[in-house]
Image 1 (cartoon, helix red, strand yellow):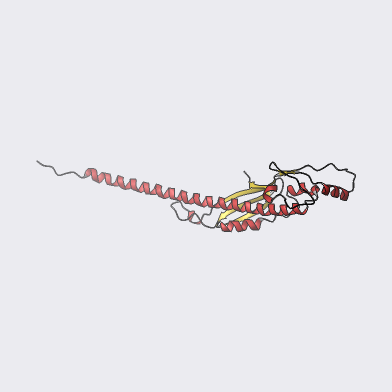
Image 2: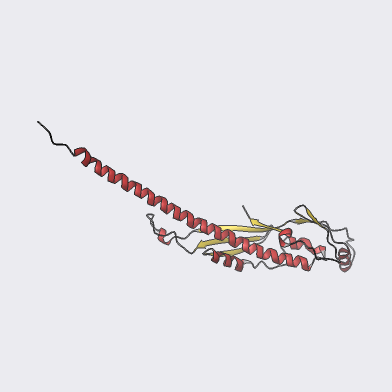
Length: 209
């Protein structure tokens, strides 16, 4: 007697197949959500880094201008290399760079040594819709700090502490100290100041760890 083929096994396997496919789809969407969040977070970090560096570079250039202005008075050099004598007003540059990276920032100038800027960047775009609840309105926030450090050292010639300050300045102008910046020496001639160090020679601007 011939028996009809049984379909019980196939019928039982179909729900398992559906469950496996559903699980794989869920994992795929979960990985997509993680990828979206990671990309958004990376965008925020890029914006924060660029904004902090832009603010610091803006102030570095002002410090360089101040040094050039006082190049004949070496008694003022160290204060300038320490970040004194100019306003730390580079935050507008941070705003500009953040906007170019589709983000907004809060920016704070840092006093102390080394001086610099601390920036917190928030992405304009949200993570977007995903299977993770709440991501449709979530924006990434990242921080960065950029500092300005002198790249140069020098030694002032010995002066008489009881001498008149104006006389000291005149004596300093006769012979300027040798400036050593990242192992390069600059011998400055007060009668010919055409070849002066550039901003990137005088200061090192970098992200703080």
